[in-house]
Amino acid sequence: MSLALKRKILEKKARIAVIGLGYVGLPLAVNFAKAGFKVFGVDTDTDRIEKIRQKKSYILDVPQADIVRVVQQGTFEAMTEFEILKTVDVIIICVPTPLKRKYTPDITYILSAVRSIRKYYKKDTLIILESTTYPGTTEELILPELQKSGYQLDKDFYLSFSPERIDPGNKRYDVTRIPKIVGGMTPKSGALTQQLYENIIGKVHLVSSAKAAEMTKLLENTFRIINIGWVNEVAMMCHKLDIDVWEVIDAAKTKPFGFMPFYPGLGVGGHCIPDDPLYLYWKAKHHGFSSKFIKISADINSHMPFYAVDRLKEVLGKNNKQLKGAHVLVIGVTYKKDVKDLRKSPSVKLIEILQGQHCRVDYFDPIIPYLSLGAIQAVSVKLTKEELRKYDCVVIATDHTGIDYPLIRKHARLIFDIRNVYGETRDKKIVKF
Image 1 (cartoon, rainbow, N blue to C red):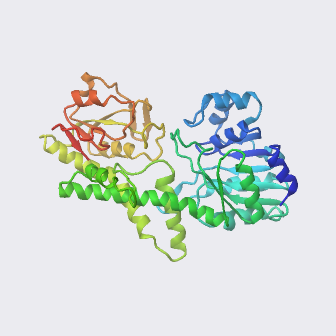
Image 2: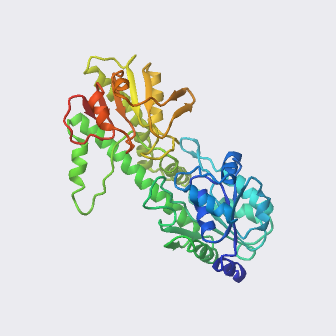
Image 3: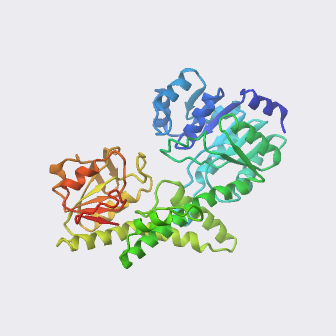
């Protein structure tokens, strides 16, 4: 291990560059800056850079006051130029990892970042990948790319994988309170990375390799997609059997062991849950193993907006209304309650499908004032008794806490409650998912 680099980390004199200032990179960069490190944020999005220079936060989990503090004290700077990598001791990669197609990873952002690093990085640099990816990415793609510079691992540079565990909107567990997984390409790389993160995170768990760390992240997210897929299938099953799935879940969770409650809905959104397990599915398939659980769960979850439309058609039919031409109000369009994030939102997908079925669709969301996504061009309506009475049905798609649900119940003609916000309320005009 480089004693000089270790000393810089321990004395907080290491200069850190964070590539990618989104939901993962910005909280990480700001917390290192708050801890006293000199941090440089690098992003190709000029709008993000300008906001930081204006001391404005664009991420819910990063308070405006924190941006003001670290920019004013000079511990955090943002830029689009990668040349700054010549001067830093630690480089952390936090770029997107989308899918090219449903089951095919797109690692072009990672490769682009690594090629920029190879062009500029100096000797005695620690490089860490945080972007979620398939097991083997650090070893099979990043390491060979970095070695093209002529530098040698453990002699000239150090390399690790440490998966992000950000949960947008979670006030209890911010980035500093979530235990950090670290896996180095070598024991020296792992030890340096552990020492770095211990400056801002309470508990750092070191695993034996980068590949083990990559797999850990995918295990966590695959656990969720499978259980969400299963409970969504149970919801459909319970509807056929005329059983209240919400009552069943509430009863099952009284067991103090062996059960963890998951809840049905329109599917999954954001980046992690819809995409990450499919990275594992793709990698396993290339090694001759087909993960049936991942594929089935992903297919069930992606089908849920279509199932919801079928149920809505049924609900309207029982009230002598047709789906075609119906006037529908969708409540909540973000993928998660109380989080201003539309990435892969199944509520948006629901609106798209309804429009395709020739419904007249409006929406209300207290944190999304307008939608401009492809064919959806809309402004959030006002939630008033006069407005509510206009609609054939109000669909509760995302259950934000700041919504006046009693007002909706009082004045809506018909309510399709996908999120069970009305619980055990008995009202003929409320239909549960």
